[in-house]
Amino acid sequence: METMTKPPEKRERPVSLEGLHGTVALPPHSAHPWKQYLAFAGPAMLVSVGYMDPGNWSTDLSAGAEFRYGLLWIVGLASLMAIFLQVASARLGVVTGRDLAQCCRDHLPGWTRWPNYLSCELAIAACDLAEVLGSAVAIHLLFPRISLLMAVIITAFDVIVLLSLQRLGMRLIEAVIVMLISTIGICYFIEIFVLPQMKPSVVEMMSATVAPNLHAFFASKDMVYIAIGIIGATVMPHNLYLHSALVQSRQMQGDERSVRRAIRFNTLDSVVALTIAFFVNAAILVLAAIVFFGKDKMMLPGGAVVEFSADADWIQVAYLTLTPLLGVAAASLLFALALLASGQSSTITGTLAGQVVMEGFMDWKIQPWARRLITRAVAITPAIILIGIRGGTGVNDLLNLSQVVLAIQLPLAMFPLLWLTSSKRIMGTYRNGWFLLATGWTSAILITALDIYGLPDAFRDAAAVFTNH
Image (cartoon, rainbow, N blue to C red):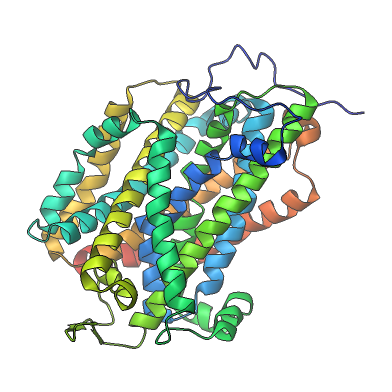
């Protein structure tokens, strides 16, 4: 039998996320499969929280409000591509004992380090911008007397909250966050399939998901722009680096049986976590389509009327999608808490991803709080400029732009990942099989082609965000 080719001196090299590396014990191979799965479950859920962050909410809301179900297929396609790429990322970490950034440094030409590192930092800052804006909207909803600008400034000090939460343990934090987001998902499910005044056409939704109108899609520059944003919000480049590091938090053995078990359960973990993320994102889009598409006002349960225009700031009125089920006050509170939780959760994973790429590419080590402050300082600047120019409007536009930036960074993470995991020299017998080869490279080429096609309009829309034209 052909044996796995391991990188030399694997054990002597610096490990990813040293404080978390090898901290979770695994049950014996004879344990019940469910117990084994629970031991491996976690890394993909941490990563998938970034697939349900404020950036996802803004792009899904815009897609549903502006194009009804016309981009539902993009949500499904992006989620499917994310599964393929995250599975490859987890496999790389399990087999090599190195994260993606370390593998890039080990196996790619030296001149690629700086471009790859800087593009990762840009992606992390773009993602953090979404957390800034999402958290600011949540604070404004919870405390209406706090202006949006002041709420943005308050988010600059979330490093204190971050450090306090980390002392409670990562599993407890994620359990609370998943509970809040799950509550939102359950509420959306009830609204879509139970409430008589909602109940969308299942046939129409399925048709939009599996048989898209490509002619209408490519004829609309705005649809392409939002589609790129959805992809960037779903297949986040820095998550590909992070996942390959997080899987190493398990106390894995290097023998063939243990490696195959780790690959199997991490693959299952990725599929389950990202499938849940797909249903949450699809539900947000569908509810936005029902509540906002083609309408200029909405009557609340108490009789009050809320008016909105076709270019409304959807993230700031998104809580209205929950009012038919919960009423205005409860909907506003629950939505704000879930938005704040998703933003803070992504802040944690963004900080971890920053440590991975900084240590992996550049071998630099700094304290997490300093890392957090640097990233937040970069992210908060465009938010303050936007609010200074446009007041309280344009938040959703800037959120969407941040996700387009993420999508444009994706090729620099995808192509090295797929090349590394397809290499027999690096991965040995665990290199990508024909299925991951086909789906992974197809995903990378599709995303890159869509980026190139939409790039000119992305620059145009970037300028429009700040000029309001």
